[in-house]
Length: 208
Image (cartoon, rainbow, N blue to C red; front, top):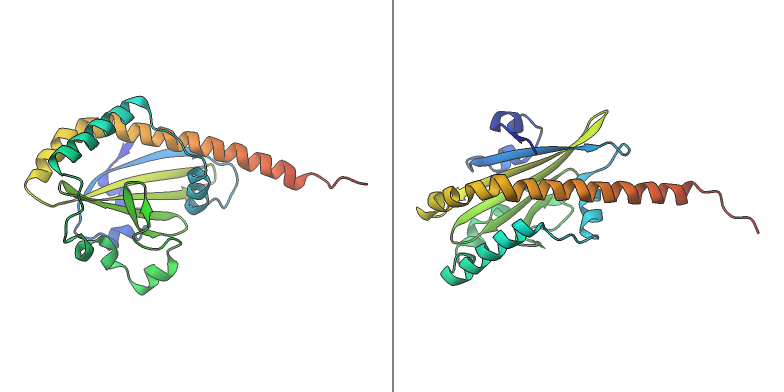
């Protein structure tokens, strides 16, 4: 699963570049998906994928379990008291709010939605280790779809840099590749469902 440069990611026509100005882009990834048909949006794909719950791979599940255990022991995962005033959702404009298909601060697993447009979704997570954001975007070409994943991290303390350095190998070698593989699997399911729906939609009505 290819990791791409900051420069390549920032050339994409995305709202997030201006929206998170001043928040460092930690890394970015892309995965190519087969072109099933034209006009598929990220919102359509995410809604379909959310209806088919998938478990993460055993290595990722084990790492997540360890991380959550440590978070409980050391109190890392509590949302800071100041989060209400520091959430990225405070940056939303009236236009952003009107365009978002999901209300800001809606829970999405461990994250909260900042905004979700047709082809761009921004989620955030704040605790005592980091204030992070995850960007998911989908672009269509004549031959494929490109699914992008961008991770932004804002420091919350001197411990943030140490924490990121400790988990960096696991994120890049295990977590993100597993996450993007799950996107590919969800896309394959989405494709099969779309083809089945098309067959039933195009089937002539039965007589009698």
